[in-house]
Amino acid sequence: MKKIIFILSLLSSVYSFGQFPPEFPSNLKNKVFCGNISVYGQKYMSSDIDFGSNTNFDYKIYISESEGIYVEYNPGQKFGRDKSGKTEIVKSFPLWTKEPYVHKDKFGDVTGKTTTYKFKVYPDTKKDHHIKEISLTIYEDGFKFDNGEIAKEYSRLYLTINVPYHQDAELTISSDEKECEKLKTKAEIEKEEKERIKLENQKKEADRLRLIKINDALSKNSIEEAIKEYGYLTSDNSEMKAILQQKWDEKHNSEVLPLDTIKIEKYIRLNKKKLSTINQGDYLLDFDKAGNSSNKDFPIYQDVPVKWFGSFSAYLKSQMKVKVELKDSILISTKYNSSNTKPLFIDKNENFYYKTKTGLPVATISNDPSIDKKTVRINKVYKREKYANGILIDSQEFRTEKTVGIQKKDQ
Image 1 (cartoon, rainbow, N blue to C red):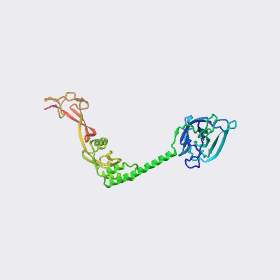
Image 2 (cartoon, rainbow, N blue to C red):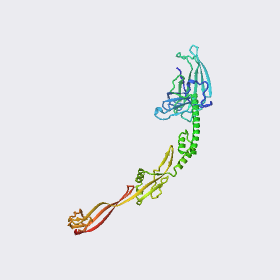
Image 3 (cartoon, helix red, strand yellow):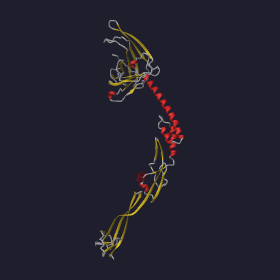
Image 4 (tube, rainbow, N blue to C red):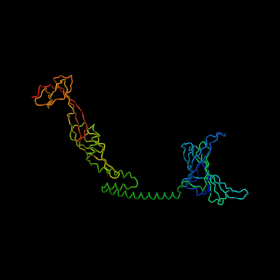
């Protein structure tokens, strides 16, 4: 039946950081206690009218040997509002009052003794979440409760917390109450910190030895080996990283990468419009590390090649061959027009005849009354295509028109 009563309130203290008073029970330390409480609204101007409705909310009380005491809660929980927050951490507990008390039954017999400690707190009343009061009652072993149970290592902690527009919330938890979470003890934290420092020192020593290996590799102009060793460092070394990057760039400064067919085709397809203005011919293009072409008529090469090794990279120069070809006067269609309605014969040179001795074919002619019946108008549509490495980059159409006379018969 061990119980702790917390009357929450905002505390500040004069003890050193995270220092509990010697009377503070060990079975309360390094635990988180959870619960739910309901509080009434405040009275309006000393009247019987409630300023606000009653509310209830969940809370968590943290008692940490390494930090102190604080409470998390959301006064707006009942109304679906997020007013969650936590109080300031109470890190020290200057004694305010100490009240010993002897308890007696109705017959005057002593049932036990208690001592209540009240601690000074200095709440920041400007904040919605703060602890206003803290007290601790310790029951002397052998204390006899009304139900006949005998106390052993039993105590109660009381905290009073502020609830905006409501009465203060008084939380009660007893020392035998089951915690909802466990916190690390001061000894555990100190042990972890020692282990962390030990591991950190081991890493620093390993890095120191690794840097010796890196410098040794650099003295032998083995940049790859130096980069490999750098990859084993446990922490970033910006100075060494800059040295290795410079060495890696210098190694590949004069390297020129011939671009493969796939990359060249991608370059051509992405730059059709610009390439369509290039005269036909064979071009050998050199690109610098920024992708600029040695021939200023050609666009920038965006996919600048990169040489990787580990986490280091160097931009490379590149090269490609481009052949620009022009295919002109590609016939698309031919159309013959005349107002002559008689069958006309046509030879391979597009001469037209009324009669044929050699069996010339009959021409397909569209009727156009606006044309002299002794002539045929020939309309042709051509296209002009430009290719780069066999990829069509431009296509244009143009038309021709001429009128020829109709002859009597072929020879």
